[in-house]
Length: 252
Image (cartoon, rainbow, N blue to C red; front, side, top):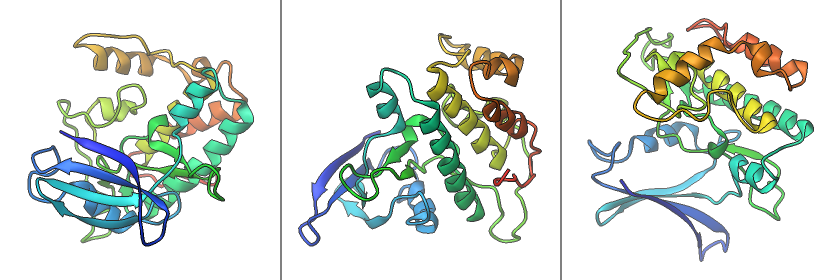
């Protein structure tokens, strides 16, 4: 699999853009154009999602041209001595919840919420302090396109989607993804940005996913947020108790 993103000046506008290359044999291109393109057809340009300007094929590669953005929250965290002030994380939380609410309203869950997938706008522009959510390759529908109803619950223990460090417990257990899972992953992302580490980091080996899941299940919100302001604990308590098909109270 080859995925490359780099800046290029578009001669028509003079504005930098990002170009994403995917080889025709890469995962997600088994039946033609990348699956991610379908998601961007629905979500491109909505609040917090970069705009796609062109999709096409060039030789052995599928290419997608989209807005060029700034550093990720992971980059900001790394460049800030592995820490972030609580005021900054609070602002990130509010904006991230807003982005997920908009994405969910379009019938999709992201499926891989983590610091690396939240990017700021281009430095030196009016959007440099805006937040964007990228990498929609693992996004799935929580709402059936035909009926408009919530998708059916299923559980396949051998299927895992996401990133082990930030994935919800339900994702570890192979349960169908829904809105609650994005919010649980966001909760772990926020605690990581605040504390600089999560209790389940450091496991290695083939059993890593199992051990991380076990530790997540054994870690209470009080323990996880012992060095965080109370609202972060309240947020985690709320999202980990959401039902599979429950509509989150984003404003809460």
